[in-house]
Length: 357
Image (tube, rainbow, N blue to C red; front, top):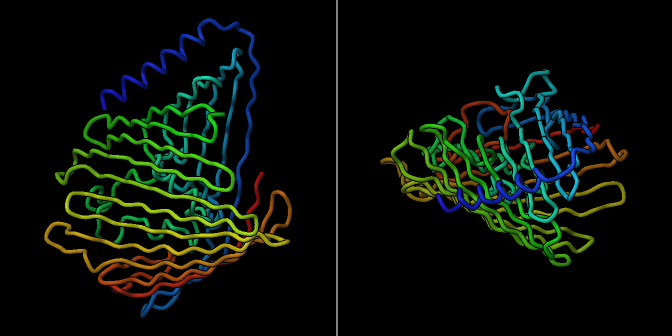
């Protein structure tokens, strides 16, 4: 980790030195954008009935984004990205932190790459979600399987506290520059600032023609637990055939004596007025959490959806999902009735609209 910090510091010094010799003339832009997304949802849990609701962010998370860039000359630029999550159904924030989704400041060089600081997505999440045709949201999103429930390595490492499977705070990142013959990559370091989550992660991807492959790994040290390091590894690929975009990705969480292995296969088929999407996520838990064996636990999550394009900014969508649990697992579609028994089944569907601005 010390070597990684030295490498990141060296890159920062190079970018800073280059910025110091530039003339004062600069051109800057600030952009306000975002999207609003709402859907009617119905979720049934085996033996517990059903719940109908209006929800936000089922095709893509409702958000408000403020971005700015200043061209410094000589191929250098300074930029920021602030992103706030919105629960459209209630008009409230999606988290206690106002810029909960992203808050970053960057110094970029077309030749050297980008140095980025702040709260952002971790490399392993980026390497997982790029292969999820349902964008990790809604009744069919893989977020319903890659979660802290039921008992497994994520809960063992973090309990009910914020974890590092999606985002991390206090990060310092380096991103490779564009134009490297299909290669892209990043390195992320996150300071725990005490006994919290200290993370180091990296991602490397390569694209050639219709094929792309990527791999990422992250490790979190959490001094608040005695169970050791939490590791997160993801490897995946895409094959774009024109009439079909096919994805496959494998992701594994490990914590002490337990692990959660996730395999997702997904695809999207363009049609004249939109896109048909499908996915399958299989989850297998192994090992022990304390004195409890989680070996027989897991789930299979199936999703099917259609997105109908109204314009460049607006779409209608419909999605169906079913989660079948094994053992004591209680993975479920969000928004359903409480009390699903271990090994039970959860199903859901939703009809909604999304508008970008």
